[in-house]
Amino acid sequence: MELRIHDNRIKKVATGTFSGMGSMNCIEMGGNPIQNSGFEQGAFKGLKLNYLRISEAKLTGVPKDLPDNLHELHLDHNQIQAIEREDLKKYKHLYRLGLGFNRIRSVENGSLPYLLSLRELHLDNNQLSRVPQGLPDMKYLQVVYLHNNNIGQVGVNDFCPQGFGMKKTFYNGISLYSNPVNYWEVQPATFRCVAHRLAIQFGNYRK
Image 1 (cartoon, rainbow, N blue to C red):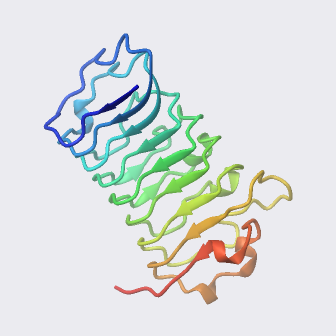
Image 2 (cartoon, helix red, strand yellow):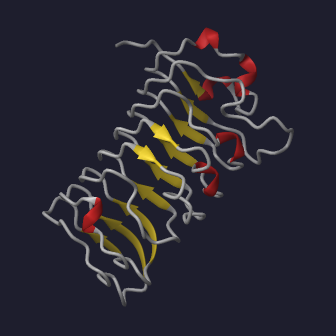
């Protein structure tokens, strides 16, 4: 079952809105003027949900109390400014997270390793000044979008764990273009857990 209620005027999701619906594959509710306060506690209680998109809304943070069995969560094109440690703690089954086109300046250390199953992370088109901490601890992460940020340097251990065999899958996509970091300043060993060099996308930086 899918529910598509995008591009409406929804400002509130009340407690128990989805009660009795059991399992759903997709809820698409982007393009609504809903804020974080518009989601009442228990709005998604009892709902098993695979995919949720709340893009192009008025969110300033990751909403609380979303279904903890989500596989995909897309919160792009909002006004989110930071990811705090507790924001993602319950989403251990998430394999794709979309946070692009926000105003994110910081990702608190310890936030990302909670996402034990994550394969794909979108943090492009934000205001990050460094590569988020915790990526080396994400054993199954394969794709990271970090282009169009303010990242000025990349450390040798920003992406890959230091111990051999700790990462279960190699990266097949890392995008760093449109950041004020020069590719020749990044040590080759930084990408020691990348499947092939074509998976790394650098480019010219323009202010």
